[in-house]
Image (tube, rainbow, N blue to C red):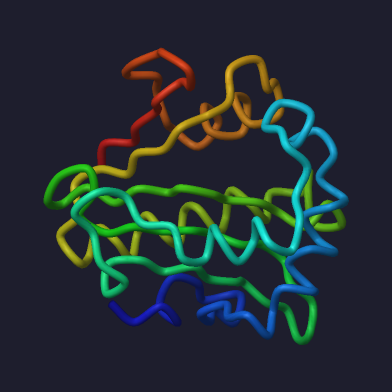
Length: 160
């Protein structure tokens, strides 16, 4: 996968330990997310997220990426390919910079990612949403994701 092809609008690149400060600054401003998804972000939790892998997956399947407009971090995404099954991609985290929210940019990013993943043969995108988070639920539903299971989180899926 060529991560730069995930967006035609923004520069997309893998995020590293050198980016922790800008990720932290962006994440801290997303108060609604952490209201429903405690604990509050720390630099250590960002580093843990960068390394976290689901069972049976390797780092060649994980893409902890940032979408940039110049020097500004617009969004972050933790994307796992072929999880939980082949031809399903899993978004472990998608967070928008609050300065870019509520104007369709997040939906455009998801649309571009969906289109590129579809060209690679992926059939579905799956993710988990915190129960009760009205902002996240509304965003994902608006982008065509439907609930498929509910337990600790609401598992949502987009069939392409």
